[in-house]
Length: 406
Ligand SMILES: *Cc1c(COP(=O)(O)O)cnc(C)c1O
Image (tube, rainbow, N blue to C red):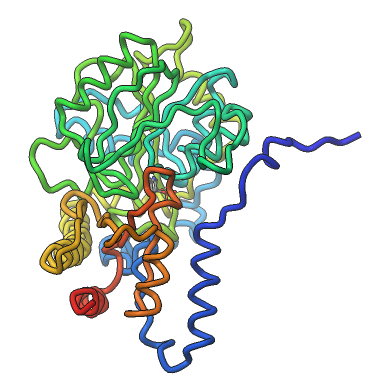
């Protein structure tokens, strides 16, 4: 008799984005005159097109696929050498980090990697996550049976250690009292837009090394860092090669959300119970994955060319101009806001003690602006609200003007 993985049944419905979509659709239907006024600043997806250097590299690779002499079949499971080398040189060696090309595993994105990486750890590992949190880390551990039971009232799992990120601690977690085995960190952070200083991250690396923990470090927003004392990679910290896995993505810097490309770094020095995690992930990749497409890996390589880098700076600059506009506009309007300096997310406190969802309804009804309720990312997100800088500049300006007029 077939049986299901009943861990899936423990998952509460993914209400957040479907509830948002339903509420917006209902509002548009009830208010046809306001329908075209709705501005969506809730999405975590880019809106600018791919840049010319990347498009040219993709076209060229497409043509190579049409010619017997240059056609490519299966890609190497772990990624083409040209891309792994470009990553190692530009993202790591240029920043003084010791990461070799053969420690990089190319993939189709950081969402998959952040969800799949837990497979190489035993089901009795205890995970620690920031609260609020990118839901993928928790839900994939629930699916694997690592999270215990869900408490509807508190919105938490019995076997997960939550590390509150609040205004009091500057939205950076404190070292947990209870010892975890796996620690998920994401900086610059989605959803809060907060980041961590190099000294603070060093404390996490030291803690992980002293307690035999592994840190899974999601650096998907690395390209948005604008301040000096913010680490671009966890490997800037001493000892990180012994305790940290780093995840990166081409989605948010180069606009590859629909193209799909990312990578995971597992240093060969990282061992758990005497086994190299590098070997386990290589085995997992080799067994379950056939590599990102050649055309897309060439597009990724082009991101590291001189013109590619300049164009990517332009893209990030476009969104960060929006972020600054939102941040400053909301500050002027008297809101309590943070983020938006090293990340394309602005995290604001709902005024007058409103809940996240009350504020969502209020903004939709009053000024036709759609954002994301902070409570959807975890209990410590309650009374907060996320706006993104991924819209067009024109819409961002219109939205901020409306918010100022509230
Ligand atoms: C967008 C995002 C990613 C990247 O996901 P891809 O699968 O590479 O598109 C990873 N982590 C976080 C926290 C994100 O917000």
